[in-house]
Image (cartoon, rainbow, N blue to C red):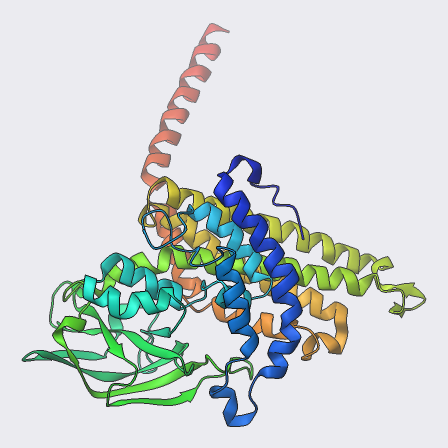
Length: 438
C-alpha cells in the first residue's frame, strides 16, 4: 500500500493515529482474508436476498471492540469518534481496499452513513431514539429514496413523488429506483424525498424528506437493478413503488420544504467518503496488477509482463493518477474542515469528477494485465469497475458537477478581464515611456 505522503499522519491527533493503525491492521488482516468465506456464506438464488454472511457479524463485534465504530461522524456529533473530515478520509481509503466488507464491519457503509448524519443533525429526540440509535448500534440498516425512473433525477427539482398531508398523516405516492440497501432484510427504514408543495415558486422549497418504516403498508420492492450484471445482493439497488403509504406527521424531517437543504448537507461529506474508498480500491487494484506482471510464470514473447514497455508505462500512469486524485480529495476534506461543505463546493466537485474516472482507468489497465481473468470472479477487479462506473452517475452525474465547476470558474472572468486590462494599460505606458525617451 502506498505511503500517505500527501499528509504527515504523525502530525495529526494521537487519537487518529491510534485509530488509523488499528483500522489498517483490521482491514488487511481481518477483512481482506474474510472475503473468500464471505462469498461462500452468501445465499444462492433467492436466498441471496435473505442471508447475511455470519462472518460480517463477527467482524462487526471485533471492530466495535477496537473502537473502529461510527468513525464517519465528525466532531459536530456526540455520537461519533470526533475525527476531522481529513482524518476520516484517510481511514475511508483503508476501508475502500475491502469495500464489500470493511465499511459495514466498521458501521461506516453507505447509505447508512448519510442517513445517520441526517438523523443526527436534523432529527427530533424521538426520531433519534427510534431510528438513529439502532443504526448507530448496527442493529438495522436503512435506504435513501430520491432517484426516480420517470424524470431526469440529476436535477432533483424534477422529482414527482407526492407527499400530501391529510389530517395527522402524510400520504406518499411515487416510484423510486436505484435505492441502495433496499433489498437488505435488515433494512428497516427509508428516508424518502418528495414534494409537499409542488406549486411553490421557489423550486428548492417544494421538496420535503420523510421517514417511512420499511414495513409500512403500500410499499412494494419491485426488483433489484443490475450494474453490468451485478445486483449486489443482499443489499441491492432496488426499484420501489410507494402507493398510498400513510405515515404520521411526526415522521417529517425538520419541517416541510427542507428537503433540498437536508440532502445538500448529506451529500457533501458523503461524496468525499466515496472518493476515498475509490482511492483504496485503486491502490489495491494496482497491487493486483504489480503482482500479476511480475509473476515469473506469466511470460509473453519470452518476457515477464513487467519487461514490456507498455506495461511499465501503464503502471507509471496509475501511480500518477492515483496520487493526483488523492490530493484533490484530501484537499476537499481539509476545505470542509476549515469551513463547511457548502464552502468547499468547488473542491468537492473536482474530487467527485476526477476520482471515479481515475479508478476506471486504473482498473482497465489492471484488467488488461490479467487478460480474461481480469473480467472474471477470480479477482474483485470487475466488480470494482462496475462500482467505479456507477459513481460517475451516483451522487450527481459528472456533467452536473462539471457545469457547476465551470460556472464557478466563470465567476472570476470579470475580475480577470479587469486585471488584464490594467496590466495592458501599464504595459502601454511603459512602451510609451521608453519609446519617447529613446
